[in-house]
Length: 80
Image 1 (cartoon, rainbow, N blue to C red):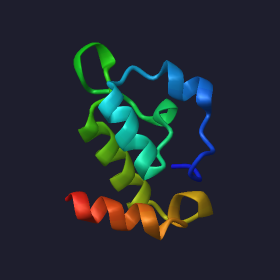
Image 2: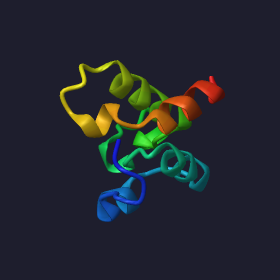
Image 3: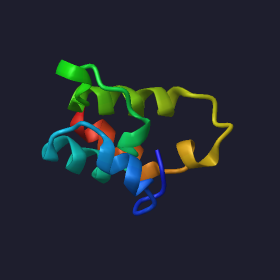
């Protein structure tokens, strides 16, 4: 995850995902360039973004950018 507004725009643009998934990822502060896709032909799904966030939240907090955002954590909890 990255700081809001600080994505690798080239990687984000190359990611194979629908507009809805892109919006969801931006709202959570997830750089789609770092998310692997499990959908058809490697497409990134909303479940892939959720799984990425869950992994990032459970990781050891060695990288402050991953653990720093209470806003991301709260939004994710609201979505289930």
